[in-house]
Image 1 (cartoon, rainbow, N blue to C red):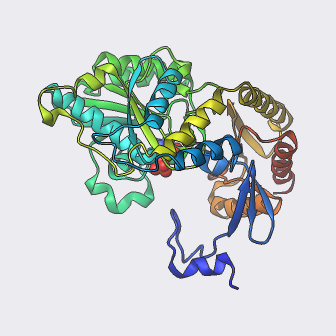
Image 2 (image 1 turned 135 degrees about the horizontal axis):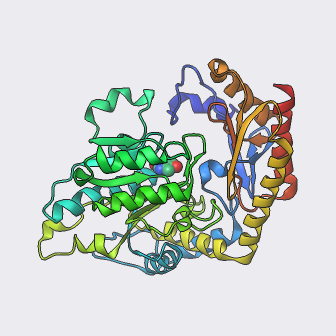
Length: 422
Ligand SMILES: *Cc1c(COP(=O)(O)O)cnc(C)c1O
């Protein structure tokens, strides 16, 4: 029998992959808790929760039970004209978890569609009010997904070259720092025509794809105040930050000023099934509520509010709110702080940062070689039984909430080996 790794190469085209340079995929056969198992029987601790999804652990029994029960009751139905218990129960659970101004939920399938919908809501909100606002505002280093609207508001990437001519109109501002915040606010008030801007889309506090780059809530809050005073809708992309990772349910919970629209996916369904939600305020919803049919939001995906995905999301929220998971989160935050104290002054460490269970460190290495170093780092981690995906010269940990002390120690040790041997 050929291995998965060999059979894969015949018909499959993988995401974010140049197959000529990287022809070989690792065949995985099983996942349980914080551990992935490959076809050779080797184990890897999932140090990035499979792209920030399976926060309560892979193949979680409580989630499986709820999805299995739902599977036997109602699997998939049209969500236009029909409704069902899992979607309603999820709406009640999610609205009580979200910042208090959120009132309505719109379902879709993935993070990119959730931001795409957020963007469309913002553009049509103004259109329905008879105003033309056709520009979006975004952070320079943001990432919001791979569909056209989402790509347009993401930071310019060399990989997006073939599409740039077709992007929607976006004005970019730098991420706030202690140094630039004064200038940034001045620029927002004086050199950007905020009255032409429909919405400001941002990853609150942590920019995942930008290598876990972090900014302060107090700075972001000042930006939100300015844009909102000009009628610009605040669209928080919490696809990565949502559901407890920052130490609060949502990163937006660190601020008094609330977003008008929130995009969620990834950990929403606990890594069991794909689904996304875009939530909004009553005020946004009301701009679409009309006797005029054309003022509705004519956007819909076939699998909208899939009952199985709703059941997984409900089970995930129940776990998130449990004392056990909240204790685990507090515990991991403390472990990371202890690890940070141990390594932050190491000569190979340029800087470190942490919010909640997200921990990142920048290596003090020569940048021109980093393509190479990144591959070497990845191989080192995998060889030591740890799945981490360094971004440039940044190593970050975003392990599931159920990661044990021993498993986390293995991740820390593997990073320490890098510091002492690279
Ligand atoms: C992953 C991600 C997306 C895109 O989600 P997909 O499910 O991959 O389409 C959008 N925004 C943020 C902040 C993300 O981390």
